[in-house]
Length: 289
Image 1 (cartoon, rainbow, N blue to C red):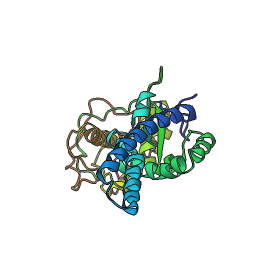
Image 2: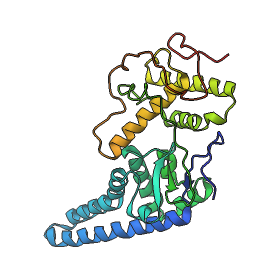
Image 3: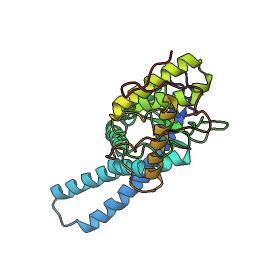
């Protein structure tokens, strides 16, 4: 089983979970949810035994949906992709770019899981997982997620280089809500591999990615900031917001209003990257040449 490799031949250091481990983890989760459902169902028999058959059937169906559909969505949202079965087998649900999932990802996975897992006894999910190169079921495809193995011997995740000290915390007011996950993934790939690229090719790629990021955020870059340093600083800001949500460091919103802090001349102690773009021209980054 090889590491997760993107279309740009960049190794993310994450290994997709395959059908056997995912299947066993799902069975363990199913047993836990089913036992909880049966306990609640027994309690309902004594609590609402005086109701007519139609009302009793409605309550029973509601409790079934609550435990077999709603509970998995709540667990994956609160645990950021780790259910009891996945935790036992070292698995986790992540976004396509490797970041933690949110409620909308868990909701799509849970809604599709009710059809392809419960509705078809897992047959559709098994077929989709076997056909998919990354072992994804339909819920993962529609949600933009991937189940990966966390406990992998010798697995090494290449960290994103930190921004220059002068840029850290400069983008706390930047609106990142319009930046799609594929662009984040492309930026992270570039930052982790820019030392292996030809200087001219890397410079052109940094400028292109920085201009795309500026177009998505709607805020011009600070004057005099190199393209690679700008990318590293914005990625660092997004990682800080993800960490704040995951570990309860305070409510931080991707779409936090407000302009970027006024730019001051930045002179890094050391180059943030071997790629340096020219001075920005008309609010963007000048192409290398």
